[in-house]
View (tube, helix red, strand yellow):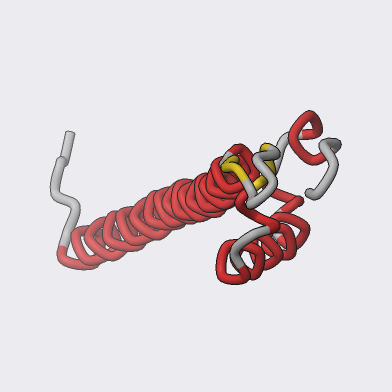
Length: 112
């Protein structure tokens, strides 16, 4: 039994194993890139959702603020201070724009 492969057999074996290693490497890199893309995408979605909820939280804080007017009645600070009113108006607009990232329960509330 002759186990002599020869130089041509060795070259063919070397080239075929290199091609196989390259294909496996390309396939693995492709799968890793897909996983990284999904991970990055969900990070962006979570960041946008967090931003949307922070805007809603700030709006709730503004709407909860009350004080007394000159007549001694309780009123929202929103109606007494133009800067607070403008900020609340901006937050309402941002809340509408970011509504896609809010839950159905929050999106269904008035002002958002």
